Length: 465
Image (cartoon, rainbow, N blue to C red):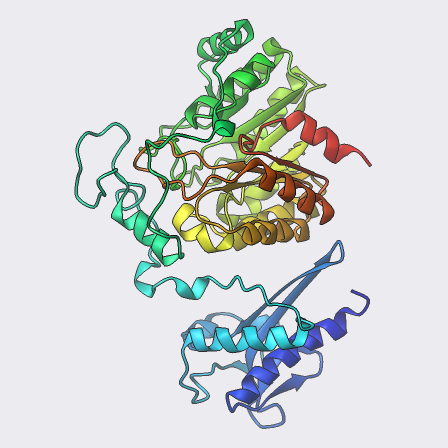
């Protein structure tokens, strides 16, 4: 924007107007961004903080309007670096109001201020989660019973889906009438399996070098196409993930120790397969101090040392947002840094309860700021709307993401999220056009697209001026 200061002031004014409607006299203090109460009194205190980032002509703005937090936590820090002024909240100022009422008021004011008489698209989701369900996601309370278990156990539906998982879908507004597990797939979702010579050669290489591919572990429908084309996605740090996302087939039992020789074996496989573009993904390893970041970096270095001409793409977890872990991967300079947002904001809690929409956007923005080509993926068919997919692409574009992939969700087992809808190919075509119109360099969008599908071609497209 031409005048960022004026823009920040417009956010302040929005919050001041909200406070006025609630009977609170809010205002500004020079050189102290945010909204304050008792501005000219003896005890000015901050009631709202503001943060703004502008990139590619798009703004990402956040503000924290304190409704009723535990203000004692602010005694442990120096809020906004301001030592001589305090912090307050609506509750502390004598306003008895619910979070939902505040959200509705803020949304209405924002629509009046910025909507320009257009319909307002709301994506507020956090306040919908009951406080009792904010505890960390734990194994045994997630996607249901282990794959292969017979019968119906406690907490399961007749088709095997856990009641807890279905409850989270219901909280997110997904109707309880999904596509049945054994229903016939649309014609466009059927893929013939072609286990030709190249397919068998890659499978043999993986077995001989004791390596794991996400192609097999995640049940990718494109495995024969990619393997016969001489491409595969290596999955490092074992085959057991410390998270239990509702859509994923990867094993979630307790992980084994990381193998220090694995990076060298991946490099050997890349050399043997004569790859020009390789994708290295990982299971989430929250049990490791760095989340597995050093193993990712070592694998990049090993591939570059053995096959210097090979381009390396990494698909990584969020490393819990840890700066040091992310920097370890950034410093290894992967040719493409891929981290998947997976779904729209409203469905995050149901789909991947150990991750977060804002954290994923932050990880991608930090990777872009580090000068890397960035990539992310959206899985559809789990209960989102067409407009929410567009909104998610807009958020990815604002975070500087260069490549986006969009594909249809396929339910791996009865213990995973049900398919809410089959999106038709024409909708995927529309999403591709809309995403690239936003400035995303390349959008790979089709029912059978997966995160690493046509990875080489996507990277080529993003590299073109």
